[in-house]
Image (cartoon, rainbow, N blue to C red):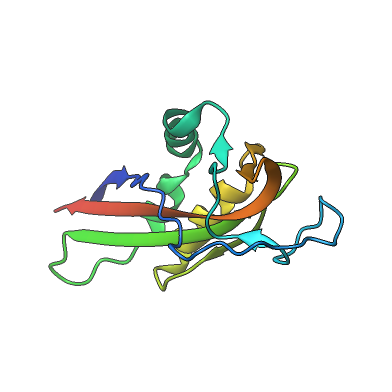
Amino acid sequence: MKTKIIYLLLLTFCLAKTHAQEVVDSLNQYSKDTVGVFTKVDMEAQFAGGDTAWRNYLVRNLNVDKIAEKIKFKKNQKVVKEVVIVKFIVCKDGSLCEIKAENNANPLCIAEAERVIRKSPNWKPAQQNNRTVKAYRRQPITFYFETEY
């Protein structure tokens, strides 16, 4: 059976739409925890080079070939589509932490989506009231596998 691999990246950044509250962060600015994390900020965290560079990073670094070899197609099934929504924190130093898939999907796809985001270079951190803050980001990644009989 020959497998053709197609994957799409949905780069719609879905930030939770809750109202930001003034948060006093008494911990070291480089702590990797969820204390003092904003869900809404004045200026979003950004990947160096912007959304286009982020998309290119994901395309270059996702290793879908190893997943395609292991994806199980049911009888007469030609397409397997898996969407993984990864939530993570961009810390004050630009590093990423608390990287975790929010939804149920194929474990292979979840592991690959988390891996590629974990491997990411540092980002430009978010700003709130002209201060650097920790902020949540969400990244949907759609894996689309098609088989040819």
